[in-house]
Image 1 (spheres, rainbow, N blue to C red):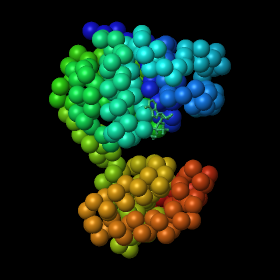
Image 2 (image 1 turned 135 degrees about the vertical axis):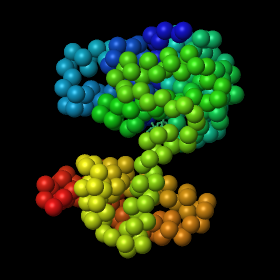
Image 3 (image 1 turned 135 degrees about the horizontal axis):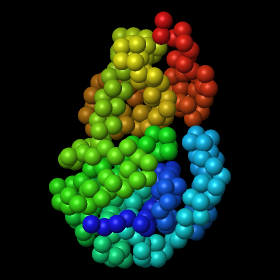
Length: 299
Ligand code: NAD
């Protein structure tokens, strides 16, 4: 069984930076790889911001965050990035061509024992298994945005993933403070989006078909299930642009009347007005004090 000591994270964008910092925070040596040094310089600034977030949200000490920062190494040379890697976590753009090309190059320079894991949200590992040149040592390890707070790690193999490799990655996820969530088979959207996407889609259907208003729909969900947020509160957190893009893709593919209505609604009322959710201070609710956070909201 491979013992994971050295981890390389490929891609230092939104998720890659978070995965690298979380892994270093839990004591691993982490190499951060990206396509050029300018991008890696930006990543260094991101890590400083993450250190502040860990202090604020996790009450981490400066000593702990400095120790994490000191475990990060940076390079834009792929062979150098993976020369000691036991595990490579890929968090590069959600584009099948970019990922296939990356795995082809990676397979030629990584040591034989190295395990490869993709953080892809929407693409299945079986799509890249042969490009990795080592399908048995390849699987998905999927994190959620703001991983230090939303600490899920969904682990999903493809039919050719070795069971021991799978268990190694489940153990690794636990060791970096994640709640490890193993899936027994490939599932588009993993568990979280298999649950969330239909809920959010049902909520927008109720809204655009004028069955009920935003607050009543959220209130129903919150009172009935005890959830702290309703679907529109969740949509504001996810970002309305993401919801728009998902609905647009589905509308273009299926020509479903509800989806077409939803796309038009989101565009007119939110996208065109720059109301994109929590990030812009305005979405279905107004932030920082959304109406659903008022204790009277549920009455
Ligand atoms: P991002 O655009 O923020 O970052 C991608 C990074 O990859 C950039 O730094 C870019 O320079 C780098 N990159 C581009 N081509 C590369 C290559 N060939 N080799 C190495 N690096 C390369 O993207 P992101 O939001 O961090 O998403 C990355 C992956 O994580 C995607 O597969 C996405 O589905 C997944 N993911 C994203 C989120 C999210 O909320 N953003 C959540 C879960 C999973």
